[in-house]
Image (cartoon, rainbow, N blue to C red; front, top):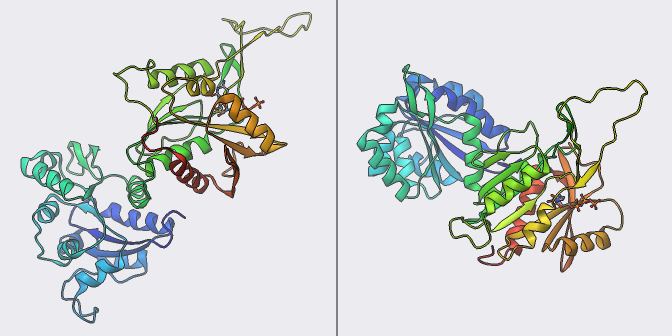
Length: 407
Ligand code: CTP
C-alpha cells in the first residue's frame, strides 16, 4: 500500500467542500495511511467532529487549548507526529492566514509550527479564487514551498460554474502519494508507449493482442510520481489516464509510430523539448494487413477464406534508439526461455541500454508481474509484485542507471 506507515495530518477548514474531506480521510486510510484530523471552528459548522472521529478512529482536535494534550502544546505535538500536513478544503481566508503567517487557532498555528511538507487543496467560489488578494496569496504560498493541489473547474455549490472547486478525493490522494514519493526523475521528460495495437482487416475487424496496458500505465504513473513530465502514447485500452500524465490515444502501430516521432520531433530540431527517456512498453503488432478491405468482407459461396497479406510494421523502439539524439531507451520483451541469452541478444539488436523481460506470457491483463532487468552488467530480478509496486521499483532502477543530463 502506497501510504503504509505514513501519518497524515488532515486539516479541515470551513467550506462546503468539507463533506469531501470525509471521503478523503477514508481513501487515505484505504491506501495505508493513518489520519489525524484537525478542524477549524468554522469547519465544525459544516461537518461534526464526531464524523471524522468515527471515520479515522482518532479524536479530532479543534482547539488550541485542548486539555487532552498533556503539555498544552497541541500545535507542536500534532505536527511532529505527521509526515505531511494536508489542508482540504482550504478556504480563501485560511490561505490568506497561511500566506501571512497568522496563527490564531489550532490549525493555523500547527501549520506555522510544522517541520514537514504542507499541501493545501483550495475550495472556494470562482470570484474568490480569481480575486487579486487570493492570487497574491497563492503565489506567496508557492514561493514558500507549499504544494497547491488544484483547484478544479466545474459546477460549484453556489450554483456558479468555474475555477475553485476542490479536487476530488481520489485526485487528492494521487497528489499526496506523488508529493511523498522520492524524485529520481525530477526534471526529466519521459515518453512511454503502452497497450496493444489494433491492425484493421476491414471496417469492422482487426488483429490485436491481449496486452491490457496496465504495466505501461503503472509505469507512466510511477514516472510522474518520480518527478518526470510524462507523455503516454496508448493503444486501445479502457484504462483511465494517470493523474498529471499527458496522453495521446492511437490504434495502429503506424499511428503509434507517428505519435512517438511527432513527440520527439525532427532530429536536432530546436523547437522540440527533448525527451530524456523512452520506455517502450506497448505490445506493438509486428505486422499489419497490407490488403485492408474498404468494405466488410463477406463469406463466399465456395467457403474460401479471405487471403490476407501482411507487411511488417516499423520497429518504433529500434528507430528511436538509432537516432543521434536518442533518449535513454528501455525496451520490454516477453521471453519464455533462455532469458539471459535471448534478452541480451534483443537488447543489442534494438540498441537499448536496458531491456525488461516479462517472465512468461501469462502477464497480460494481470495485476501483478515479475520482471527481469537486463543491461550490460547482467540480469537483475524484480520479484513478483503488484504492477504499481513493480513500476515504482523499475522507475527507481531507471533513475539510478540514467546518466546525468541523459537524453
Ligand atoms: N516494439 C516497438 N515497435 C515494434 C515492435 C516492438 O517499439 N514494431 C518494442 C516493444 O514496445 C517492446 C520491444 O520492442 O519494447 C519488443 O520487441 P519485439 O522484437 O517485438 O520482441 P518480442 O515482443 O519479445 O517478440 P519477438 O522476440 O518474437 O520478436
